Length: 260
Image 1 (cartoon, rainbow, N blue to C red):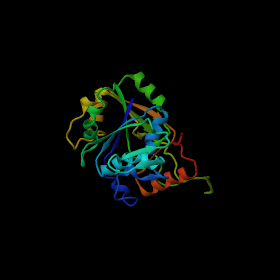
Image 2: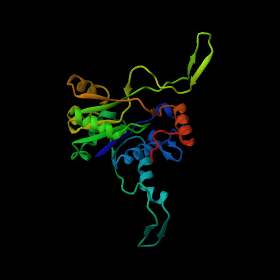
Image 3: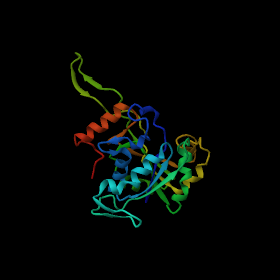
Image 4: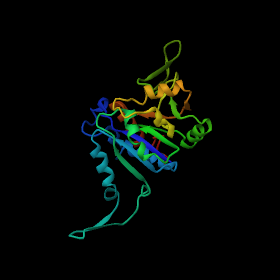
């Protein structure tokens, strides 16, 4: 099983955190949010990744090209027969990562279409965004997808509240305050998709193709889109405030997605 991760956007809404790196490389703790997403999938046994690159792709490439040196002790022998000997292994030693250029200005549908060749042998594969974490049960998500047999499953989540929620009695006395409540209304797409290979019949190479628009609308018309309902934690990192929230949860040891 492989997971494709959309990593190519400009991240314009969070430029106040970092304006010179792609959003998936913004840190939670000492690792990029992209690493956290990959680590989460790996805990469910999914360790083959296809990264759909675009803006500042070199930053993501350099992170993984230098991963061994940055996580291991090593001895280097200089000269014509330069040799590097690593002295220990890390838990990510069995990850297989394909870093695919999908265009600087491509939208999500085009990015996915352009990595089709890296997913040819997959009857089903996973797809998600490189800027959101959650505690979705990946095994149950996959079971749900295989059971209904449709082309696309999207994880439907409760959108996190953007403002503090006050709960008060009739006299106005506040008895509960939630700084970052989960909305109790409808669901939104939280990524964490599962796709059958037939998804590529709905995609084209036009760089303006947005996966969440015409392709998904056509899937709805064809009765091929199902939603897996998730009521647990889910949080994107679109703004500076959300960056601070995710880092605060992580620093306190309260990050629901950290299952390793």
